Every structure is written in C-alpha cells, then in structure tokens.
Length: 479
Image (spheres, helix red, strand yellow):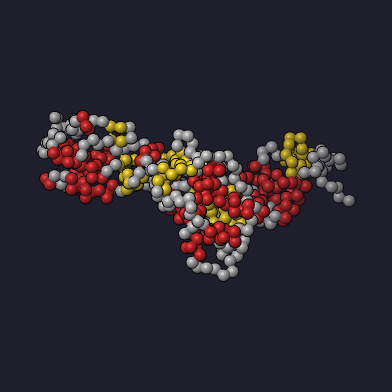
C-alpha cells in the first residue's frame, strides 16, 4: 500500500450507502486482525481508529459539523466534542495525541455526511400524506381515517420527539373547566384549539397565526401552560419583533420547530412584516445563525402570541389581518390560584389527544373554526388600526376608473372615519392623501372647472359609497 493512500481497501469497508458511510466490521473483529495491520502508517491507524470510534458511538449522521446520534429511533443532536475522550481511547498509545484524536473525529464526520434535507423535527408526512409524529412511546400516524401508534423507525429521520406519550384515555377535566371559564364563547374555544392543532400538521396550508389578547390576569398563560408541556423542545419562543427583524438571525431557531409560543407580544411598532407573512404562509426564506453560513429554509411552526394589546405594523395591509386569528380573554380572575397553572399543565396528555383528533379532522377537510363575537370585533379593530387607509377605502369608498370625487369630500369623510375608530391624529389629511396615492396608484388628483368656472381639486378613480351615480361629485356650494 502506498504511504499516501488513506484508505484500507477491504470489501467490508467499500460499501457506502447514499445516506452515509455504513460500517460492516465490529471493533472486536478489527482487533482480531480482519483488517491488515500497519502500525507505522498513520493513514491505517486513522482508519482503524475511526472504525472503533464508530462502533463505540453507534449510528451517527453528520450535516457539516453537526452530529446526530441515533437513540431509540430518534437522531438526537449531539456535540462532537463529547467524543474526544473516546477518540483518544481508541488510538494506540504511541499515536494518542490531541491532534490525532481530532483527525479521527474529522475522518468519521467526513464519512457520515448526509444532506440537510434528510432530517425533520418531530413531525413529517409519509408518502400517502399522513402525518407521522414522534412521541415518547412510538410514532403516531395521523391520517384522515385513523390514528395509529407505530414503532419508531430511524428511517423516518426524526431529530426530536414530543415529550409526551400517546394515551387515548388521558383526561383533561381541569383544562376543560379553565378554558370554559376564561373563554365563555364556544367559538373562541373551538378556534383556539383548532389553530393549536395545526401545529401537529407540518405545513402552513391554513396560514393561521393566533393572538390571545387580554389584560394581565385573564388566564392567557394558564391556558397555554399544557401546550408548552406537549411540544417541549419542538417549541420556539420568538417575539413578533424577533420575527420581523430585518437581520433574520433568530429565524434559524424556528428550523424543525412545530410551534412558536411568544409569552408577550412586543408592543413596538414593526416596520417590515414581509418575514412574518412568509413564515405564516410557509414560504422559503434565507436565514443563518450568528457567525454561521446563510441557508434556505421553510418553517411550518404555528405562531402563537400572548398580548396585552394589539400588534402594530407601521406599513400594515389587509394581508396581516387575513393571517391572524384573535381570541379575546376578557374574564378577570378575582381570586388567583398560584398553583393552578402547574395543575393545568398536568392535563397535557389529555389536551394532546384532543389536538390529535382535531388535526385528523382538519386533514379530512374540515375548515378552521372562526373566532367568536369578541374575536371578530377585535379583528375589525386591528384591521382598522393596522391599515387605516385601506380600511377607509374598503368601508367608505368605491374604486373605479369611471369615478371622480371632490378631494375635500374625501378628506372630510376620512376625518369622520378617523374620529369614529379612534385613529391617531398623527395621520393627518396630508399624510392620508400621500398614503392613499401610494396604496392605490389608480387614484390621482387633478383640477377641473365646476359650473361657476371655478377650478377645484378632484380625485379620479374613487368616490364615496352611495354617490356612485354622480359624475363628478362636487362639494356643496357656499350660500
């Protein structure tokens, strides 16, 4: 063998599968002499040490420098530094140095490289479109027709499992009572549970994010307590400000997560909502860890926010309102029980069963429940505060190339609208018209002559509802 050849050529070591380099020799067989010995050749020593290290560790896959060790059917993320001592131990004494140990680890890492797309988190679809969900006692298969508990298969390539076991008989009496007390409207309860159930379906087909809005002491965090217990490490905790930040650094934390639980929605005004809309819709985006390389990912995490006040987007449109479901918590707790949250969290197994069967119904084609009266009213308030110009046009005006209306009439109508909905007077008439032209390019200002041959400003492409048949709509004449 040439001294520069870094591979021991045996039939057992030449077979490489597409999902990684597979060992077909045990450490005992290696020590017994199945592989040719060459104690003076570092390449041979490196190869034998890598085989021994692999035998000690067990099944391992790597993506760049990230290691995944198979434990009970789950590919658990581990640090390769954990195995430095093992790498030193498998080396012969005369080769036992830190540098050689690192080279052995790197050799095994190179052999076990797989594609980034190979792994998922705790959920994936099978070829038939059923959801496979890793739980503590196996893999739960959720299809439109049945829910089945299967044995966990390493071939599913889960990198996490929910910290909860499937128990179809698990109760949730306390959670059910607390949910009814905090949300008297049945539609609100149904909507909340439906959106939470979408977290078990690893795509964004419903484009629904949940905002639980209410004052402190209305039970929001108590209701969410068992949700955190269900999802465990498959949860992220990014605020709306983190999600909308233009750097996008923290978005990598959503990779392979099923749900994002923001315990308090940041009340700062967000300027850019593009990333928020991409996340809720399941679109691809580029992100990276700090000091890491950029990579492209899609997130299927269901976004849940607990908020004392409504979110604010500086350049909001109807797109944000369409993706948000508002649940209004308005029942103030008069005698708080400091242990209630802990006791409600114990109902996580029962709530998990409820969410699984809701996910099954959604997979079968049932639409999401809509929020109740309070939720609908909150959505309307948010739509106006988030996009006052767009809301004014949709509720008060009519667009069309055949229309034109006096500019003063449009301005007066918006002033009345602003007062009616409590919109800040910082959105004065000048700013209103500037945003109107930007949002609706077909609306333009021009000057025409009225019946008295006076020149007045009108807006073409728009008029007020109820005045569509007047061409043009002019301001009333002074007496």
